[in-house]
Amino acid sequence: MSNSKFPDSSNYMPVVDSNNLTLSAVTKLSAWHPFVHLFIIYATIQYNLLDGTVSKIDAAVRKHPRFFSFCRKADAIFTSVICLLFVALAVILLWKLLYATIKF
View: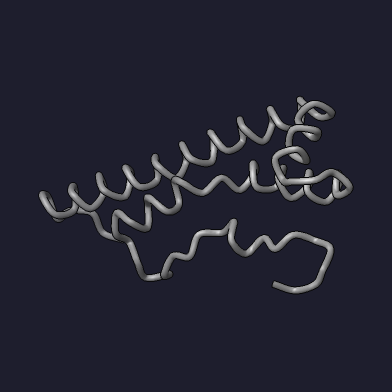
């Protein structure tokens, strides 16, 4: 880890192979919460004088409840879109497999 005063955000991003369309890749993407991690990074930077990550996040939630609520709702929408895209892909592939009439 570097000596930077900013938190390392590399552990907040899922590592998924670009050619990987398995269920584990979808699980990694659905478990990823980019907006809550944005809030965590904001809290860590904004309240860096407090001890511990949990106390920094608690202070940020108390000071900015609307931003935290937005991040939670945006993550729910993000997860829903990822799941809907996966279901749509599965339906298209099954349709193509069964009827073989779709031409891309």
